[in-house]
Length: 492
Image (cartoon, rainbow, N blue to C red; front, side, top):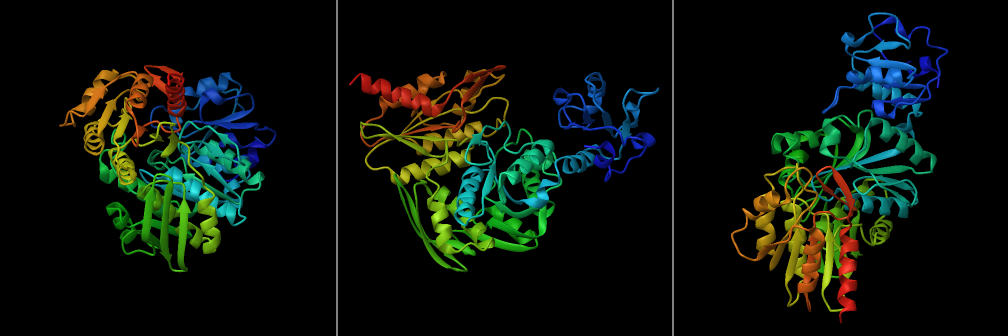
């Protein structure tokens, strides 16, 4: 792409951009490690690094141009490439990305889903409804990206500005009319979604998490609120769980086309529900009438996710029967109360729950379907993350389980035993044991289980790795459970 065209919407503060008509830009990068010959490098100040420090790397890698906001990094003599000074590098990056990738957000409708828990399942349900309505929908989220039907693993819940633009272009070219996107608080705070105007924004809930990053719950909430106030299109639908105390605050605070949902008084609400081991069913009242839904998703927390998706379907003009078919088309979501049945009568559930509230929701759901058996829970807490939730998770697990096995879950730079001690500090009962090695902990739980017991392996869900120090090793809770079940069968 011609450099002059690429910079057409940028307010350039120096004369370096003039005479760039003949320069061909082959790529855009904000990370010097991604630069290839012909790239324009945009030096952005990030949370951990200042891109200005890597300008020389970009020049050495034959970048075609440098965009920067700090005049102190302008060359003191003639440079081999143009240096383009702008007021705000982040803003320039968004405009450059839009121009380079053909302004993809203009051709696809974006649904933003935020909250502590439930984002992934809600996005899958939203996609199911829109697909059932004949409106092809792509996914961006924690588990990965779905452009067509293939899942591409992702490193972040919400990608950065450049990757988002590139993904949106690919998704639009693949025939998608919508993107259902999980929007993390980190992504909002770091302006990764800058340039987007969401057609609908969904708030699932807010409970303690990421307080290693955000100062406190009020800051965490204020960041989430920005999706509705700063990034929602003027005519967007604002879909909010008003059973959640932060959701009710948000509902009262924001202006626009609001749709409330929950078990309490709301626009989309549950009249009755039945929760079983094989799934859930609910009658849901809406402004368009009532709808009966049966799903293989287990638990009341998943009914909330269904309510959010139903509200979205209604806001997009989808009929109730199509909404029902769309919800029921979602068989399961990887690592979200994913059930594995044994031949001995007990079942194992794999779940991503990694906050005390998520763990509470999952365990309460399992308790509601338990018949004359025990709940055995295997879990740990991530290292180098919010430490204040560890004793709370221990307290919840011990209170709602018959037996707990505390183990490792991505300890990173911390000692696993220190993390486990922190978890155990919240437990006042004696119904727990420690097994630092995660595979051994899962094997122990499976060997203990019998009859109508339910085993919960929590924390990692869909993840396929374990991070210890700076080493990433393959580890998949589901595969570990299946291996343990095979071992059990072999010794019958």
